[in-house]
Image 1 (tube, rainbow, N blue to C red):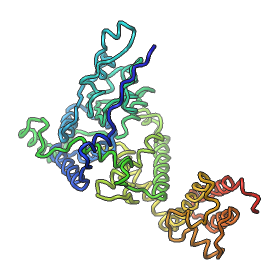
Image 2 (image 1 turned 180 degrees about the vertical axis):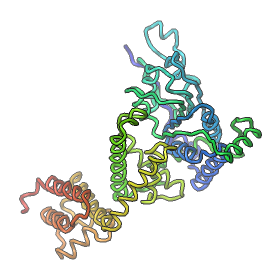
Image 3 (image 1 turned 90 degrees about the vertical axis):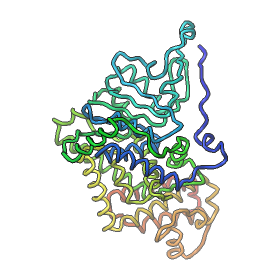
Image 4 (image 1 turned 45 degrees about the horizontal axis):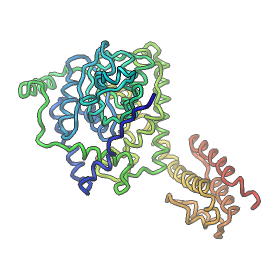
Length: 450
């Protein structure tokens, strides 16, 4: 049977540069901040989940909002999407009776007669940039399974039909969580999660009442809209896909961030073990998937971008709670902050940050030598790319006092430099052990020099 593959839509890059110029990033950042503040003023006491949604929009990911009925989930989604122009929005309320064609478009009868499943995707979620799915867990597992590749790979995969999907961000709402193998996979597609509690504070209830009297609980047109193509360009930036606008993350920042995330994951699972009666309410264990871990890099770039910086900094790491924790559960946020504070104090007091930077400088040199053996014949000072207070080149000049481009010299230098570092944390001891093995692997073909 012949596969039907419909060509992909133009890439974000080609779509935004058709007029010959990229958006003004300074103006774009200001517009995004204004839009965020407008929604926060319109949807009362939902500052954190709104910040989550805007970061999800920047990264190009999805948001799952859980709450009881009547707390304004639909209003929130509609108001956010109304801040943009030039994007199509698909809206649906899920139910158990629905089939995948509710989301993908009706089946073409003539194709079906020929035994081929082909959807008419016009007006469907497939051809929409934004989506809002209300009561998503009311959908049956067959339909939810069909949505997985659409949400993750942005591709419609049905029978012989393969089609690129335009989806940028989907907001899904639910009154309850339904835990199963399928729904766990689905929830992993919604990287940002929020639990919204009803407002019982008299002041916030008063402000909500005032908003209702003015607009009858409906989303309103903002005074200024952001072009969807500009949002897509910002997403391109935070994914590291715009060479002329790099937002950098240093290797030591990445390494330290991963240590914080691992510490948090361990603490979350320890908490579940201490409270087995609560574990079944949300999930059997806490697991940060490699996909989510990778997305933390986009998250760091998004945070830096919104602050007008072209680099991420250590102080951005605590904001990762918006991605790794469920907004609205204060205990999770506090636990992530404690994980960060604990490791920060340890690394600052012990001087571990300098050791980490030095070890990763060596790792960078070894990686380059491994991937390009021709570099073995070049002086080491032409290979170094990560500056540190006490770099490997500076150490070589101080300790060995000679410049030698041979592989043998490089191995002696690498081993000596590694031996000069006495790790002050268990994590750094582990890293040093890995680098010791890397040295042996990189120089395995150059034993004749020793």
